[in-house]
Image (cartoon, one colour):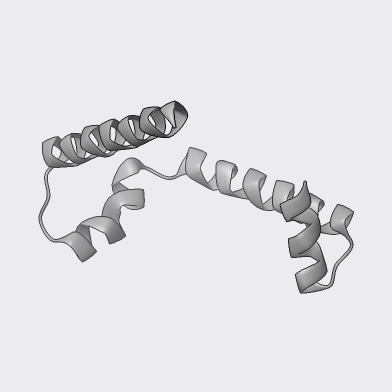
Length: 78
């Protein structure tokens, strides 16, 4: 909530208008995602990263998740 208030102040809009816009943007993105194929979504990523097959993408996602969880567990112990 603090971040929402701060950002609304920075851009000069009432917090309720900013919150409403965030929700509307999120819903619009969700609607777009529901009608867009995975191939279309990944098109720009594949173009930027060169030829990467689905197995390599899955491998990268698993590694990123493992790294994230390892760092999260380490942070909780501190």
